[in-house]
Image (cartoon, rainbow, N blue to C red; front, side, top):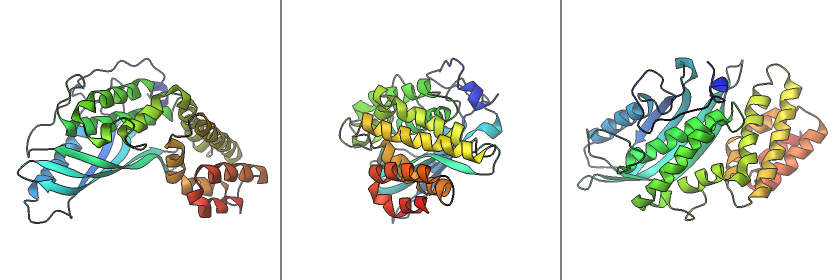
Length: 302
């Protein structure tokens, strides 16, 4: 059964994922520790292996995924400080969620950003466990946050608001993580931290943004193999929805983030293609939302 069909079925999620063959993620986790000198490097390799197993060898929801349907994502974690005597790691994580475009060899980026406060404690060889109702390990809370975020955002691209139930779990993780006191979890301390991202996704005023994800990917990119003009029309409509989402919540960073990681893709959709009206409309919206990329948006009008 495809993710599109799965996402419209009523979903019941277990708080403690069971170990059965229905894993959702194909996540490649990489630990980059070149900035750390004069210490035993085995802990970084052990950590990398443990995190890959944690993300990929467990089931996070009750949804059934075939091997080919597993969600592709990457997490490149750069360790900037490591205190061996305290088992503390401080760093950042560049993450990316990808999605295949129907009937093509092309993968599109669904979400990509840098988490600048990826800080945690880890003792080498300690088992990694996660319990939503009793979160006492910041590392597994971090990884679970992204696991559920990746699944929820992916489902949103296959059906309208399809990831709602999963994203509500992400919100619970953030709420429960306030006890950690770390900057990445704190409310209103950063408009791009983990709290801000999920808060915007689940806020009712940003529902148009989530609907835009379906319009752009399912009715736009996926349709282009069948009818290029119809697919591009849907993408144009999704860009208009992006403007509407910005109007609904001007302080949200999601529309600007979207235009950052979709920049080259959007330009390629319109460069030397589409009507003058489409080009002008899309250019005006994007140059208003993200003027820092205007040298790229200029290519849309060519």
